[in-house]
Image (tube, rainbow, N blue to C red; front, side, top):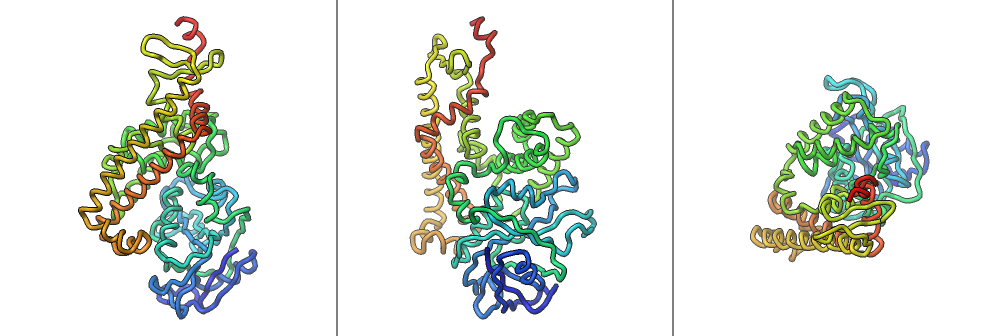
Length: 411
C-alpha cells in the first residue's frame, strides 16, 4: 500500500527524527508503524523538515470533525469511502478519538492515509493535499504541509479500505475530471440514508462558491428539495449553520478571496464539473428558450413560436459551451495581465510553475491560484464541446425544463 517512517518516541512533538522505515500492507503492519510518532515521507538523514523532503508514496490528511457540534454532520470513514470511490486508503483513529477536548464534546477523530504514486517534489506533494482538501473541505487545513507528523498510539485502532486504484490514479481519471467538486451521488432524488451526508458536503461546496449569501442558501435549499423523504427543518438548519461555521473558518485563512470578487467574471461556470452541473446552468440560462416534453422531445422557442427540434436544442447546448469558453479565455487574459504587472509571470517564466509556487508572495500566490482555477474552467469548457457531453447535458436538463402536458395542450 504505502510506506511510513516512525520514531523511537510517542507523544513528543519536538522530535524530528524518524529513522525506521515500514512498508504497510495490512492492518498488522500498519499498527506496528503507528505505534510510535510517525511521518508519511522520507527526509534527508531521517530529519523531518520541509527542506529535507525526499519523497513519499502516502498522502495523510486529518479529520477532526471540528466543523460542527451536531453528530449528524460528523464525517466518518464510510463517508470518506463514498467521497473517494474505488480508492484505497487506511484509517488511523487518533489518540483523541471520541474524547472530549478543548471544551468540545467527544467525536470521531482520525487520520486518513492515501496511497499515491511516489512523489519527490515537496511543492507538488503539498499541492495534492490542497487539491484533495478543496474537493472534500472537511480535512484539517493545519495538516496540509509536506513535513507533517502524527502522534502514534500504542493500542492502535485502524481500518483498511481496499480499492482498485490509488489517489493519484483517481485524481487523474476521467471520472474525477467529470465529477470534481461533486463526489456524492448525483441522482436527482437523494434517498434516505444518504440525505444528511449528501447535503452536508453540498453545503460546504456551495458556500465556498457563493459565500454566506442568500444565493448560496437558495441553491442549498434547491438541493434539499430533492430529498425523499424530506429532511426535517431542524436538520436543514443545523446543516446550514455548520456550513456557515466552516465558511467563517475558511474566510479567515491567509490568501482567501471573497466569492463575490471571484465569481463576478464567471457567471456561467457550473457549481460542479459534472453533467448535472452543466445541465443546471443550461436550464437556467435558457429557461425562456428551451423546454422538454416526453411526447414531443425538446421544444425550442424561435422568437415567434415553440417548435419541436432536437437539433436546435443541440445548438443551444453548443452555444452554452461557446459562451463558457469565451468567459474562461477572458478571465485568463485578465489574470495574465495581473501576473505580468505583479511579477508573478516573470517568476513562472524563469523557474516554471512547480518552483514558482514557493517563490510567490501572498498576492502573487493568490492570483496564480485564480489563474489555475480559470485554466481548469477553460479545459472543462473545451471538454464539454465533445458530442457525448453536448447530449449528456441535454439528457440531464430534460427534467429541469420539462413542461407539463396540460400546459403543452393549452399552448
